[in-house]
Length: 246
Ligand code: FES
Image 1 (cartoon, rainbow, N blue to C red):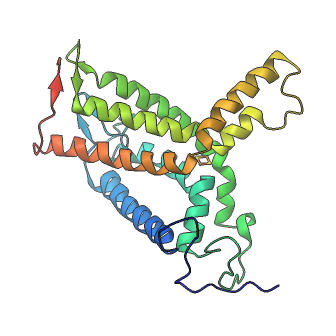
Image 2 (cartoon, rainbow, N blue to C red):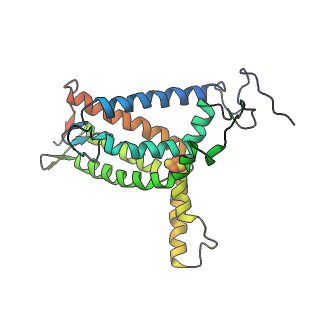
Image 3 (cartoon, helix red, strand yellow):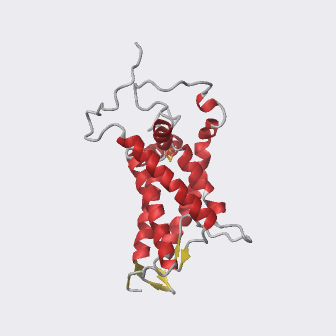
């Protein structure tokens, strides 16, 4: 049976929003974030206001005039570009490929899926996970240091933002489908050995985060932008960091 293109007025019966709202949101949010990330990494100094470090620049690597973000930003960029959820979101929203389940798509032409350049790189998601995992460890270190004010424990508004950001990023990173497969994939029996049981528990933990992977993805994207903007406003002297016990 041939698939037919629904009228743009057709609504998803499970949502009160019109069916164009989701792709419009994805295109708008990802385009905005892409432009912002480019501006931060290539055109701005490192985001640092003691004791806060922007996630775009952590760990802070200074080599001559090269912007520190260049050494860092490729990992989360590759991670998000190859993420299973984002792939679905941008294929549907930017390319209408397909626009939704059971909806006809534009001519496929010579498209060969993820078996040919450039989409074949999506198969390297697991390696992007390894790199991002290391960066999240640095961000946890930064979040702890964000409570250290000249050798004394303190709490600033920035400390709270730094902690919230790394929690959201961890929820996104450790709910990754590739990690879920690493934890519990290719196991025929979950209870046959201590190692298998440990992997089962890990798999269950990853699954808890994986269920809402899309929400973690958007929330962590927003928090990365928010903490970077906050640090740059502090650097510019446009804000004072509210502090308690510091
Ligand atoms: Fe989304 Fe791995 S599937 S981060």
